[in-house]
Length: 344
Image (tube, rainbow, N blue to C red):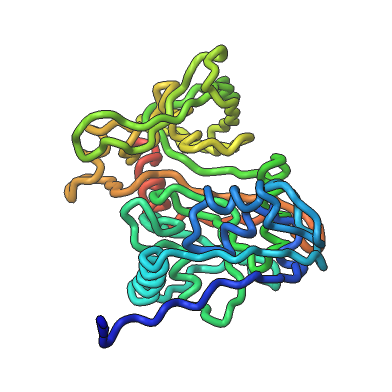
């Protein structure tokens, strides 16, 4: 007879879960709810459970795209997570808890539904892709009492400015619907090389997202390019441009996006021959280097792109809001020096 001393006890058999959907979860698709609820369970397995009819709402079969309603009773079938997956998930949670420093950010507006923060440049909005933690992880650590904090939208790591975080599931859905249906107004301040033509006000160019090939450090990175209108992979993209101020070498632009494509502003402006200063993906790399030197006057060590103004309807009251975030000091100082008129 084999006797094993100190062996691990068998994990308890999984059981059926019955969940009552509350107001904060109302409006979510069944698949998205389960993906969040069953952390560590492969998405393929979740979709298989839905297709087989094991997942039920009010005792009836549902599809992955079924929207949950407040008061619905959701049946979640027994799900066994492999020990390795469970341990990995727990390790990741513990790592985030240890490594994400608590940090609050400058708040432009906060109430029971949302937080509007002024994100600094150089901070990712969330962890992943080589970043251990981002704005949302740090915010959660700073506010352990908060039951719900989720990003409404995203900003590039090197872009500063207005970022929305929802404090309720219902607010998240409402705000994301506004973004998706283009009911918000998003205007950025960008400084570009050269004097932007004042007559060039609308950029209507399809964009295509792709990954870099090769074996160098950039291989696999995401990039975007302008494509022809008949390109099947092209996504409709519209950018409105207004010259705010112009100098001998640079132009400060107010840029409003009508679509929210990845890197849209950066690619659209660069495609016209006016790259954003400090842009390390689509910019003028030699100019960026010269501006970043310690001896540069004026000097610039980041991308000059700032989410300046955001118009939206409050998710609870419907009130029209206009949020404004002034240029951060490093951009305001550079702008004042770069656009100063030359003495006669």
